Length: 296
Image (cartoon, rainbow, N blue to C red; front, top):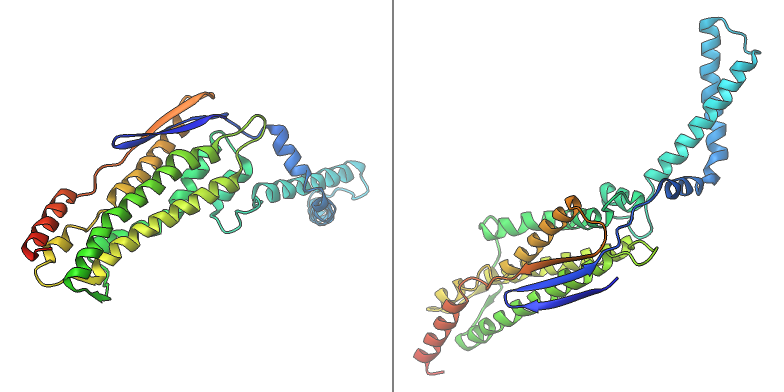
């Protein structure tokens, strides 16, 4: 695997060589056989079920229980039931480290079908970001009550406001690292080793934490009461974290594309574009105007 990330004006480009991996029939067979310790108890239970069915059939069709074909049928059905149970346990098994994730995510990590790395990343991100999306939409639409926690003086408010752009820039920097470098690296197989589902999960969790911080940032805007005359400056700071969330939406679109793309290894390049947060120029102008009026 070889990967690199190159920062560009307005965006971040990632180029990663993906070695596509999927579990073969033999891999699945080994996974089922790894459940061998379940077979004795499953065969005992299966034999009981099969023998009950055989007795019912012999009564219904007036067949002697001493006929050897009946014993062959019972044993065959017992084996089928036992193997079916082992297959079920394998298919529904939970890979190490994914205990708390959705059934869909666990199944992708366990069975590893074609493009499973992209499918798993998309599933994990959707699982983790859906509730946060709803929370953010309610906050931005004014459907959530946020109590006032701070009422700042003019110097404190100006100092607080002027730190906000730097915090947004830091969020965007972390976002570029996670999206353009860390996540592609976690999904890329190396040689004969597939990607590790736990590595993909770890990056998905970090992306969720970043997304949560954008909500905290926006909630803080609502919890601060600006000094009289500074309401317009305060209003200009709302929704500054939209470029970070937009980058995550672009990532999900990329994963959707990769699942359907005609890809047989090689380098894949994608670009995430970060737009300038809204009203930044107006914020700078308003800050300069207010400082000039105050002689600061």
